[in-house]
Length: 110
Image (tube, helix red, strand yellow):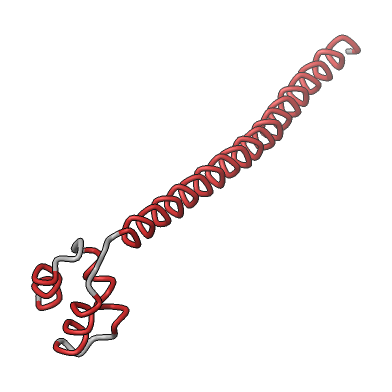
């Protein structure tokens, strides 16, 4: 009978080892998944930061371009007064249309 008991113990031990092995695999898989997730988060954050910086640089360049456009102060006054707009809006629209008062007015009337 002792031989039979040892065989049962070995089967139980084998099942226990399999269960422990599966549990360990699940645990290590979970840890690896968490590490991958944190890596993905870091990559996403870096991508967002780079995108925000690129957007900011593009906006800054656009503002420089608009500031370089020569406009007539009388055109700004006429557009602001006739269309009842703030002078800053009239000036910005005029700069966006390269100083062309007619194009700026047409844009504002749409």
